[in-house]
Image (cartoon, rainbow, N blue to C red; front, side, top):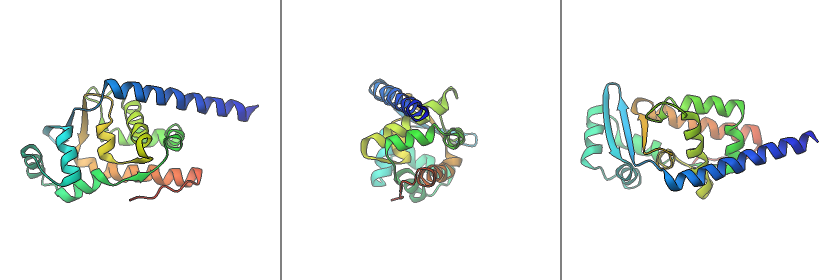
Length: 183
């Protein structure tokens, strides 16, 4: 009976999350990423960031940001495009665990809403939606699928955020025994 109750609870949670994800994705997706780096702030269209991540082509806005912050373009591209293999169901279960909630809160210091409210929920939504397409997540997909028009990314923390995503993948493997290799 307890098993059935847990199964129903987890199934209901996944259905609600998936329904919300698909509904919100149709209505909202990040249009702009606002990078902050200390007191410096730069707003970029998500499309430009996607082009940079995939091809290395830098728009004048991205070049300006990289110059001002003295960031290595290749390191940023690597952090944006590194993929983690994970199924949406496993990811949802992990993100709803105590460890997952902690990691969501930690990552939300780096990727957040403009209002700095409901960061955990927005990030969870973006992560699960990213995994639902191809059983993989990457930082660029998380930014693209963020369910608000603007997503704030703390530039000083972007590499740390990558490492935190890596921890989620390791936790999934450790807790559920499901391989989540990095590509």
